[in-house]
Image (cartoon, rainbow, N blue to C red; front, top):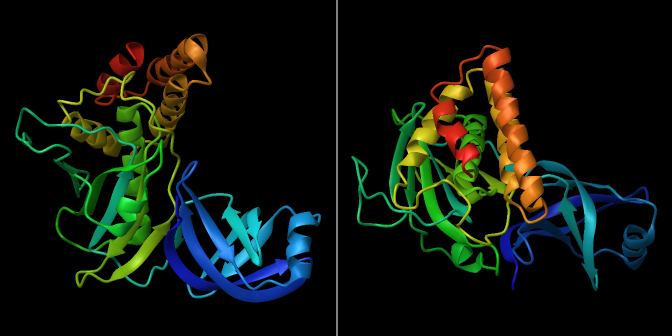
Length: 314
């Protein structure tokens, strides 16, 4: 499957003590799993041999126009092109202004409906969430060449979203990243596997992109929609989870307990854990929450009413 082209830039690359500035294409490869690549071209033969066979295992890249510095490893080579992959992603690019809206797409979240309540709709994958001073709109996938191209046997774009302040004010990119991290946790908890945003763009009132994220966060393949508590006909439960997480993050201790329990909960559903290992991980998650709630005397309400039953019966 073809790579998704994200940007074109120049990069300063040091190999064996020799610094070179060369053209660079930033691409997103979706098969066998989504990952970010920097494709550096025009390198001399000696530099390519040093990168492939030399003692260096980490390469520092400075991407000129994007103003990004990142640590990478050599992921592949073809002719005069070397492919480098960052150790961590996504990577934030630009902070030239405060966006009024953030647009992003979701990968591997199950399709849902909201059949009852104030948010009821006949449309699939439609939900408006108002929580923590933010308004998040979830919709069916938008029409975009990148969305169409993001397809592989185990990963695909399943919904498209927008996010803005409830009062319509602009906001800092780091505030948007914090909320995106919160949504990553809430959606992964509902899906029972890691699901993440992709093609994240911060937009000004004029529609101009003022910052963006290259790559995706933590993801797991979409093997099945079974094995999670999330009722696909009651998608409005997502609003309660997001509200609970906004409340939970006010206490670092409570938020830390949840993050640990979430990690074990998601890990319990993987094939690598197995049935016995999954039960042990779920027990560990419950014991961690119990310790926080009973020993540390921190009241997890209202969120424990959401998370505990689902962990018990997962």
